[in-house]
Figure 1 (cartoon, rainbow, N blue to C red):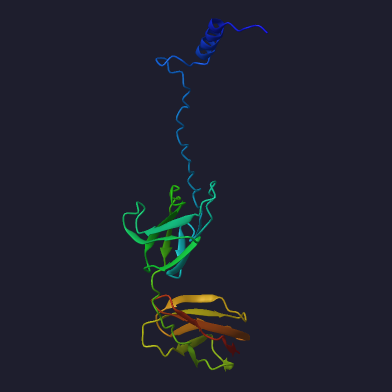
Figure 2: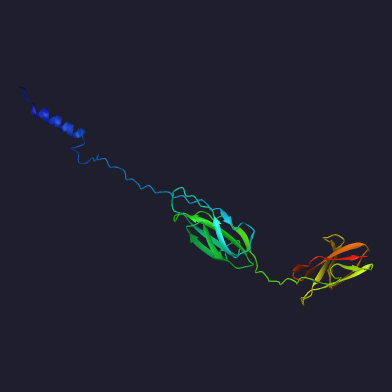
Length: 238
């Protein structure tokens, strides 16, 4: 068995330590893993809701309104809420109603006889969509109650009376005390045509021809546009 030279063995051990980076305290070759920065999650804003009702330029008869719009989409799947604003001006400086809701509708009462603007936006509690395009609508003014004129009542000629003249004096009455005007429909047709319009007195004289049957009717009108249609009366000439 051969003896190992101690000097040769020591030299081999020294060379192995240097190759593995050991034995030199001044040179630090230790591997350090670079620091990892946290990845920031990006959030996308919801889509802009589309207005449904009240329509743009709509005249609303009732001032109790339910506003409706479409559902906004959110690519991140976040819960979406909506903010609705109603204002009296297009710049939304004079806001009369504002609410946030998870529904796609909201109800409120508004002043009658006014012009309003409304819009809505969506939010996922991180990002907001832009506001929708504003729509304008109107609430109808409070209606003014008008009592229609009373129905005209026949005075002369009596129903189915036979006249022996070339003219007939027509007369009627209305129970109202207010000032009225009268449209006279007269002729030989069962549904007589308009003969005279806006008579100031409940009477008129018409020319007639012997051997004919005549039909006539009165529509009484007030100054506020109210009207009452009378029955069709009949007489004959011989």
